[in-house]
Length: 365
Image (cartoon, rainbow, N blue to C red; front, side, top):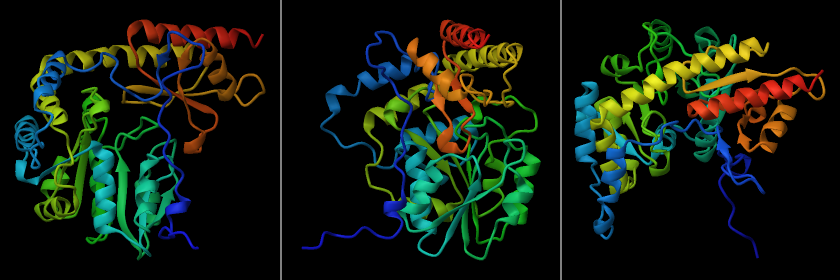
């Protein structure tokens, strides 16, 4: 007997592995591996989630009407051009299914989000990467990597795991340099953390073209990662396509309710941003004092480089931190074996991880 054969590309997928949450034999784990919200979700979002318990037998609003209206009001965009998904990951996958397939290429920067390759391969397309410059996406290198087979370009801006970003002018230059039939997807998952004057999440590019999409998530600053909630702002034609390919009830009712409440609780979102604005540069400065380079991250994490010498490596540092109950994220899967990504946690957690790294460094002598 012959078993069913998956389509070409499926068996080439390396399943995505999220940040670990537990360590054997450790009672208190400090999880700094998944860029989750340091302060947790808004109390109002938690209340809205609990209020849905009695209606779990009801299907959710398949059109995410209230959430789309809240998003439109918050960002000044057209609700009809918003499509919601079970995390932005689902939306990235839907875009690949709708616009790429066998023989097509999906392009992104060398250290871009791992889900781009998975989404491409799952629909039979070929993922292609372009070299970065100083761990930052390069417009020139991306444009040079375009071929007649390129159908989608994913740009994480800011990027995970490097934390670096392209200015609005550079992203506009990228769009202008692409063929009109290439879909530019701006993955702005960390946009709410960015305070740079030359940065935008890309709304103006979506409004000014019919070939650009902006994706966002509730998993980061709104700390709703466990509810899987994301959204895309699209040209009308692309929104229509996504609504044709998505599942009819793809976002759960508690997620929709919590998302609306999180958007309305602007004071809590501001508190989360203020927390990150203090602790991100503090962690970068403390690591610099230890002689450990970091990228100029504008997100809610730092990316720190360790030496190559035996006993001083990122792998050794990771093992040392785990022995103390601290989980960070190894970056070998992103082609950065000498680096660890460390989420900005609570004040206590941030101080603990810096102290642990300092002690690890002291052991070198």
